[in-house]
Length: 150
Image 1 (cartoon, rainbow, N blue to C red):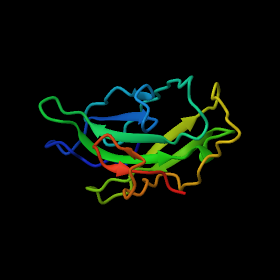
Image 2: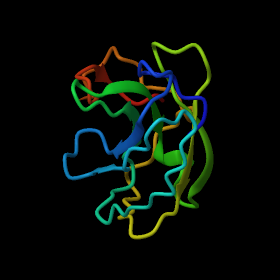
Image 3: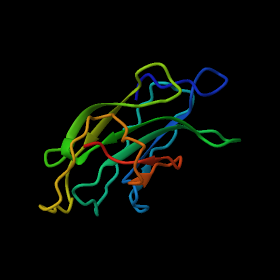
Image 4: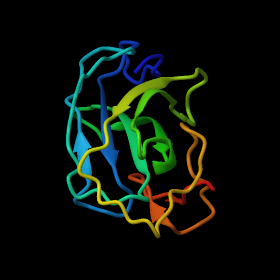
């Protein structure tokens, strides 16, 4: 990631990323947090063996806090039309309601054991854009109602 917002009193953050398929509790991974860094590199890999074509991926970046609730530094949604069938590697803009910069998250997705369902076509979305909050499609980690674009 680069350009993250400083969330701690020391002018830095202790960021980590949570990747999940919205609405599916078993599809959630987290990177370890990196202490005092606004441009962290995780080089974290994980597998979603039961991923089903059509599900978007929600990336949430948080600042780890030991005494209080972790601060959300921003979110990004990647629709399956951007990573299936050939994968994806690139920058995804992080939407941060409290920040003024343009933070980015570098993501690499290698499709593998995804269960392809031909009747379920991926919805189109702009990489890095959050879904519109006017629907009850699912709740994000902060409890806000959101749905995919497209």
